[in-house]
Image 1 (tube, rainbow, N blue to C red):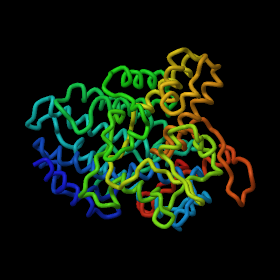
Image 2: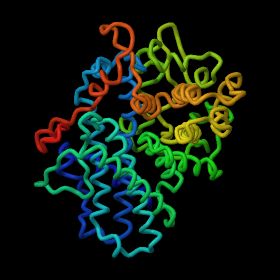
Image 3: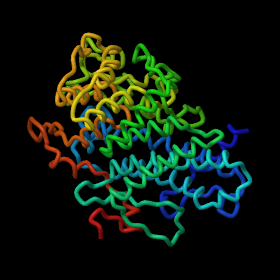
Image 4: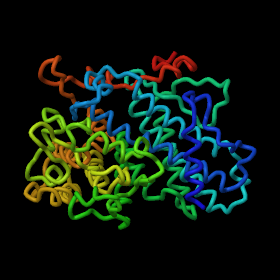
Length: 449
């Protein structure tokens, strides 16, 4: 029965129009009808389906923006490479994100307290709802938030009516909301009977959020909790993480492949389509002159030899070798990298646990690179930037987010000459534009007007 509900909700949600802020998805479940647990759960299944296209966009678009890839046969991606970002692609990410938020917000508009269900069952619904809002707003804020003006996407906590109008929130306000949402998710998961996601997925997402928000105490605590829980374990071979369908115990949260999604919706299919090792069918290959390639292309490192391939013209990214894989959203390797760097930032120095976190991944990928002594803080941070790139490149936009967090430069395009474009030069160029219809309807602007 649960499978039938998922398919029903998914099919109807994808008949929505484009004016997603004004017209949240209508599946016949108005607030006065949301009086039973099954209705709320149906909304959640629909929202999880709606984030499938949303999560794949970060991995694809950010790789193009950072020039980590070259585009060999998809013309609409060329503008990203030249940093003239249009709305033809970013609108899709914005749309799918706010469509899912509109669905989740229907749950918060309901009087869930009076729903006929146990407290544990209600907590399960609320846990997933808070988890999804944290996940979606975290990504929206990363790509639409302007660090100069401090304005970002609208913050919506309840469904909009047709006459409602919204304005841009402050990035600081939205960041605080994201942190509150993920902590609410963790609290409800602890009380829940069961949920679609779970407590440790929320805790790992919290570690990621706090890390990129530069709240290193909290990032360390959350990453450490996941690592020491014993619920997950690193594979002895990194390629096992990406063996189809993707059931590795290293994966903390994954979006399950579903054959009813269609190749244009499943995030694994989307990534496979872009990176597949075919000169004619795939359209992204690693840019061998890029910053990421300089660190990744190591013939002694299994993260390169096992997850990339090459021919005379291209280096192919093969983390997804089929379109029928679960999408790995968070895995344990990231938690080790996060715990180490957060701890170094807290203490201002390196200790043996930090070395162990670095070595647990180096011993797996390239034993000869394992540390035999404790490095200085600067040495360790440089190592972690390189290791993070090697480990997580082409997954969820991590290289873009980490470069942005550290305010590093990026390589110039060919017509700009050799060398680097500084953070101050590129940061405003890489902000996603608002969809045209949202500007027309709501007058969205990041100037604060």
